[in-house]
Length: 342
Length: 219
Image 1 (cartoon, rainbow over the protein chains, first blue to last red):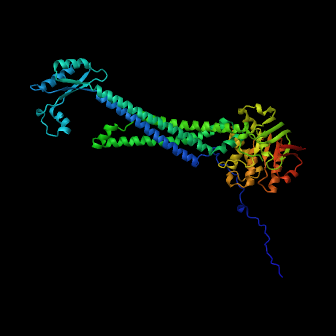
Image 2 (image 1 turned 180 degrees about the horizontal axis):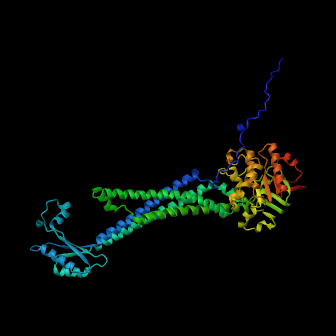
């Protein structure tokens, strides 16, 4: 029986021509050294999104509170800028003469700027919602008004003005809007207080969310802390590496949230500017004021972004230091270790 | 250089894992640490790395009583000890080169001052062509060599290796052993924890045998 054979060709030593010879391999190049903490992973990206959302909410609340505060201040300022003299009609009473007299008397006081008698048309327009159009004021005993603009910084002596008016025109009554101003001031303060309380809650929620999210992300990197610790890294070195990593994440996240919130305010302000004098915008403006938050609001948003970034970085530092402490605690108390002996 | 005297260690209220250990690790010495599984080899290595404190007894490392060393000085002492973990503990996002250079990086050294040394060491352990490879791509033996190179890169005074040949074939184990001996010739004291009798038979070295927490030394 023939044994199957495998024929192998003897390799022939062929010397390739010099130009065909493979060139000597160049020495391998080392890639640029990467960061000790991996630049991005799923946990890092999730933390960035959490920070962006919390920063957006915090900035939105901050802007909202500053907007409410500005609106309340504007209401208060508008009402306290004017006083009203009301003259009740009586039989055989020359209303027009009384109105002029009341205005002149008011303007004779230091601290008044301008006096305006509400004419028949203006008074009829004022009563139109209740009494309908085409109102003839001569048929109704409707009180008439004189609106006096005052200097807010040095208002006139209301008591003296009231006394003089009572003497000169017994039918006149001076309303310095004090009751309304007091109510509005109290309402504005309550609104700002509620806004500030909400802002504080949002900030506390943001702080806790950021702290827990940062700690969660760090727990996924505990092995890095351990390896660094065992190759002789000092705690400050390890903390610095993680701080830098988390500072970058938090700056990106908080910038995204803050810029988005600023854009929302910018867009709302732009929309309001474009639709001025429409009933919807007038209603919104009357209720909320203008959506512009001013440079102080934008500064607040910027400050919020920085606070969030610093908070994340600080949490990362404290957590890393605590992890190193835990490793050292295991060292001094072997009962805490979860490793079994070999 | 390292002195243990009546050292004992227990985990919590459990039995003593290590009992009355008294021995020295002299400078430039070479020894195997062996014993059955659960005898306490890894625990003893952790004591040598100062990552555990004994329940009783005295440990002196580099002429200092370990129990009196403040926490912030421990990293400086650990830098004089190289460790090869049984599970390698390489950082998966760093290349072979970066993992080996890590101890020098944490010491604040500039890359230009150590680049050549790291590349030469990687060539020495047979990984000259794998410098830019990430650990998940490496074989068990290659990971082992990266871990060894990382432990050696800063010329430690003591090298502790936990089952350094556990994941490699006999020729590679022989090669790694030669590497440890070469390092020892250059002045580093070496402690190799192993189960591998074949490996121990290749070198006429001191044997420290742990049995049920007690240590017997055969010079």
